[in-house]
Length: 131
Image: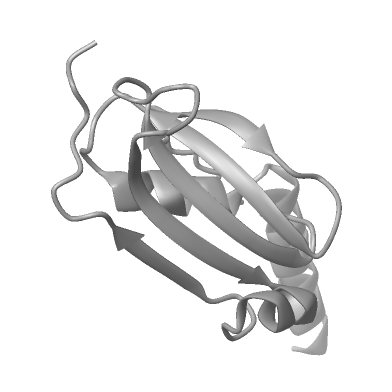
């Protein structure tokens, strides 16, 4: 009886080892494609950083902001400005929305938000004129 238990346990362990070695872990999902936008300026130094983004439409502005924020890795306070790619001038952009992101304790101190928090506001009535 003891021999059977030992053999059964050994067989079970070998089967589990084989299953694990065959790659039973699921493959990571492909990253979701983000909304269309272009980062036109991004500060890379300092505790207070600006990120300027251009979009062609007012559709999904919050999704654009969220996608941009996910890519910001350095600890800092980020100020994100979403501008329409058309309708602005050299002296005045066509601002659609503004946001802040507090990455880490330095980001919280700089923005006044909690660590990891965001704040996002659209400009009422802002439009993206046809190109």
